[in-house]
Amino acid sequence: MFDVLLSHIEDKVDLTEKDKSELQQFFTCKKLRKKQYLLQEGDVCKNLSFVSKGLLKSYMLDEKGSEHISMFAFEGWWISDFNSFINQEKAVLNIDAIEETELLTITREEYENLMVKIPIMDRYFRILYQNSLVTKDYRLMVFNSFTAEEKYTQFAEKNPDIIQRVPHNLIASYLGLTPETVSRIRKKISFK
Image (cartoon, rainbow, N blue to C red):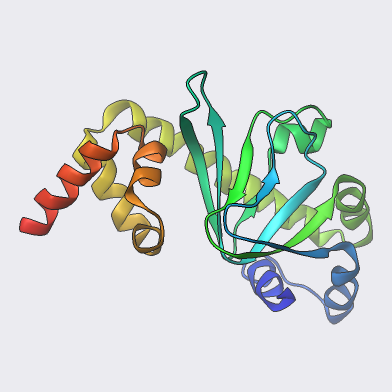
């Protein structure tokens, strides 16, 4: 489980052997069953979580109880309600498992200790946050300017694994489309 995290970190920064041996002490292993919550709206997000196996979704519920998915997180991704985690405020997001999932979690206190004890991790997280901001900016542009078919096609090309692993109604929610629209687009694409 820890090897997935080490590999992910080493893709971004160079760790010494000492860093590698110290790193594990900051994390706790956690397993989730399918549909089990990692975080519920209104709770304070106590952990930043790295997905070593499985798949989760992060979402808000509207007044009608409809899900509005903001993120899918699969192997090699981090997930949390980051505002809640950093500021220790009530979460606005729900996070639950789409598949059985294995996580490595780190508390806010241990996250801060990690930055002090292994300074290269500050650079690692800065790279992640920069990439996340670029991704969110791109997603906003796509959401506001692409047609439904362009949204789905672009998402499918960038995330072929998710297309196979996630029910199309969840993909529709993520793309801001109806399940019927996604079904129609999928049929149209399969006939091409």
